[in-house]
Image (cartoon, rainbow, N blue to C red):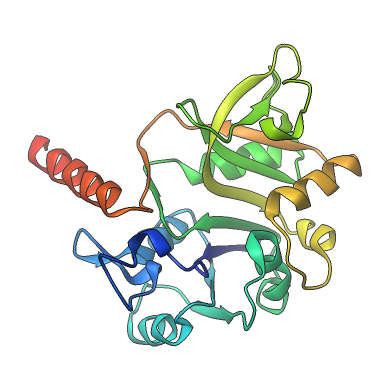
Length: 239
């Protein structure tokens, strides 16, 4: 079964621009290494045969980095002349993903100790189009599941309130996908991946949430990067 990883790295990184002007967000240093290295290596360790990276803002810097660094597996660039959103990134990269049976979609600014192989196994066993990594934490943009961890939708989709008995989670920026998601996305267009999921659910597709109980962080601000680096130092000193 062909497993391909994809890192979403096309964003503008405006919250980091003041601290690292002229540096694309995926190349901002985290613990002495570019942020994107952590995502690529997580996908490699999950068993991906290769990784696709989408890029838009300062894409030439990212292209030069990927050409110069050996991550132990092929890493291919999908440059977007116009930014296409998290769902559109998949459609634009279809030529690089066409032989995939499964895709692991990973935000460039996410780090965790999650078991991505377990995430993939849940999707396979559940016969789902997608399994999304989630965590119980305080958040303002929650996703909802029923008691069997079937994805019900984003909390904001329910204008009259969340369904009775639903469970509320924070999304962790990692998706295990069947390659059939490419059929739902269709031709290249600007679209958010959750809008793709909504279309799939309306067509009767099954989606799941996979709860992660360990460490997770979003590296979207300088303060969060510093906190993550402190976490790594503390973990190293405890060994």
